[in-house]
Amino acid sequence: MADQKYFYQDGYSEQEEKKLKRYEEWAQKSLEEVKEGVIDGSLSEEQYGAFSIEFWKDESLIWSCLKAEHDIEIVFNHVRKFLWRDKEFVLGAMSERWYYPRTSIEFQDQEFNYFDFIHESLKSDEDVVSALSKLKNIESS
Image (cartoon, rainbow, N blue to C red; front, top):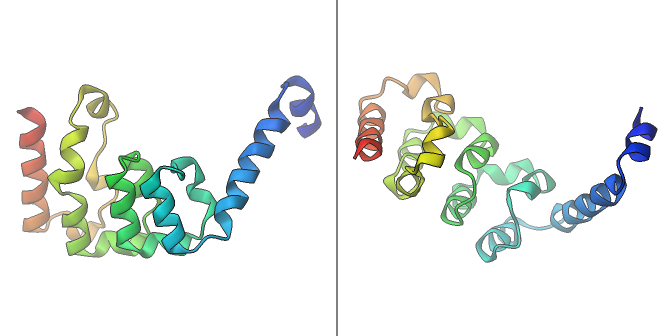
């Protein structure tokens, strides 16, 4: 079946080869180099799979990705699950700073929901519910 894929799709193997080269470029990088790549725009969401998943424990990488206006849902899908149990992290992730620029019609159509990420233990937390309420008020104004 794989042979047919290469046969029927001209350029497929070339595209895959380019993707692998981009991945290889980031696979050996340190956390600091990855953050620099995010900041200077040389690393995008497409390369997230190339570097260590351990890097997603580092909140500064997450904030760097959000500052660089990477897709919030893709970023949050890579965040290590234990961080979604950390109230301080969750409240930081729910900041207007990240959410407000994304209140456009296009973003709202994505039906993004913080509760898809937040751990059950925090979903009824007073501060988390309050933060979500503030974001909904921004969205409707």
